[in-house]
Length: 361
Image (tube, rainbow, N blue to C red; front, side, top):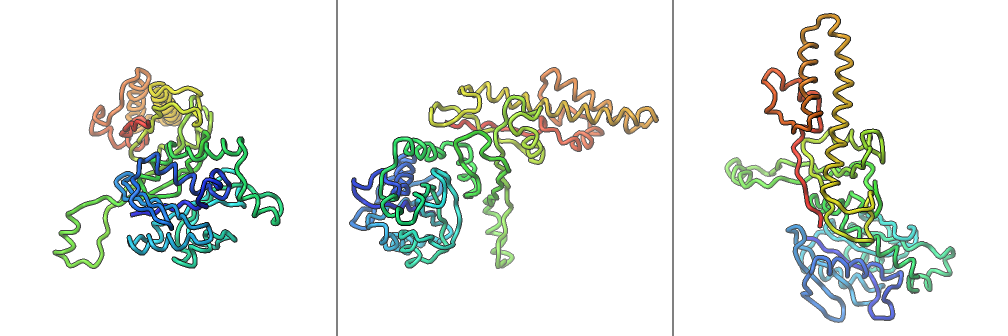
């Protein structure tokens, strides 16, 4: 169970003001996921629904910003929502326009909405900080935050809010993690984000009862969010070489394929063609394997001159794989004899990894 609270001031006069960017994002979440309004009074609007099978509440305090803590406290206490499952969206003067950062706990930075929430529930909740820039002098802050975004600023903020449709949002949903930056530009995820998910198993509960275990520790699955590759990645295009190295370390690949049109969301090739994207990625992974295999083949040639029997066996296996790749055959471990499998596995070929395709629409 999670609570997302967007901070803002109520009333049409405050619509589209910098201080109300929390409301703006909350409204988009409510609309995007078609959440139901379950409560409304003078202090708050509360919406609820399921997002990726998780119960989610979205709260908009209708008191003014400096009294936001009352509404947040009421919902947190009534539904017994943990503070580390509570996310507050707010404007941040210290971040450049549309930049987003997430942190747990810490000071309120003089933000009167956060200050109110801290007084009611403490500081150990997550803050989703959305940058609105700084006016340059502290005396200008009060009027600046209550002014509306310019047209160009509004366009930039709206693009950031559309980050929900990026593939990193899928990662966040799978892992209940806030590590991945869901940004509206290519190569947003440069370093891989890793999230860990417990694997449900009813048998553990039964075993715990029999063994009178004090603690149940389930198996875990790690999800690694790696940025999308581009044509030429095997030759280092985009940030290809770095990403290909990360792909080699995983056990299986889930390829998120874009299947929607939206002019606000950048596509690295400036066109939406899911089949072409799949073909591009598969080709780049195949080329990466070909390069790796040819390098290994070159290193074995030296040992062949010394009549090394093991090297000869490995050399033959590599030639077999190369022939399959060059004829666009699908590689599976079943294609290899029992005395070949250990060496094939040691090559850590990307083309051998199980792959699924996830339609992103």
